[in-house]
Image (cartoon, rainbow, N blue to C red; front, side, top):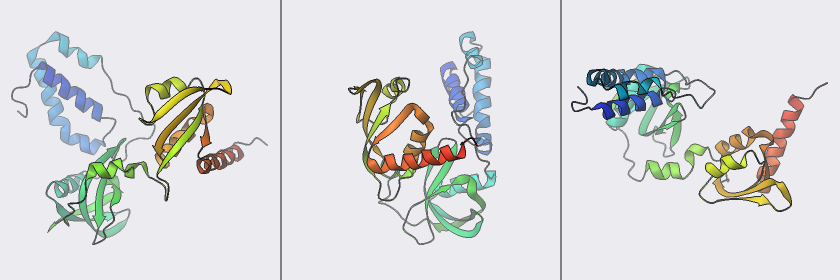
Length: 255
C-alpha cells in the first residue's frame, strides 16, 4: 500500500488529482500513475461510503487545449527523470540530432507539454527542450555540471516560458476592450498591475492598462481574442498586430 492510512477523503483527493492530470500529461507518463489511481478507487470501494463513491460519477475534467498531447517515448521519460533525480548527464537524440550530451536542471509542465531545462555539452546557456522530442536516451555515469546559481523559480519568474522576444521585456500594455470581454479580464486579470475602466471617449468600450511581459504567449492570446480587443499601446506591438491582421485579411479575401 502506498497510502496505508488512506481514508475516504484522501482516496477521493488522490482520484481527483490523478483525474485532473489526464488531459495535461502524455499517456506514457500517466501509465506510471495507474497503480495509485487503482489503489484510491479500491479504497473508496472498501470504505463503502456512499457520499464519496458517487462523487467520481459527478465530476469530470475537460481539456482546455484544442491540440492533443504529444506522444513521448516511455523509456526516454523514465531515463530522463532518473537523470534529473540523480543529477546525472544523459546522451540522447534531440530533434533528430544524435549524440547530444545533456545536463538537466529542471522539469516544467506548460499546458500538456513537458519541458526539460538543461544545458548542452559545455555551453552555459539554459535550453528549454520539449520532452517528447527526445529519443535514444542513454543515462551516463558522469554528474551534471554544478549550477548553483540556477533557481528554477527565478528563471520562470523572469518570463523564460513566456517565450520573450529579443529586446522585449516588460511593457505598459493599453488595450481597448469590448464589453463582453471586460468581465472575463476583471475576473482573470492579465497581471497584478492592471486597471480596467470605461473609456471616457467611448462608453461602449473599456480601457485596460497592465504591466506585462512581451512574449509570444501574450501575442498569441491577443490574436486569439479577435475583434474583442484593440492594442492601443505600445506602438511597436500595435504595429505588429496590424501586420498580422492584414495578412489574415488577405488569406480570407473573397474574390
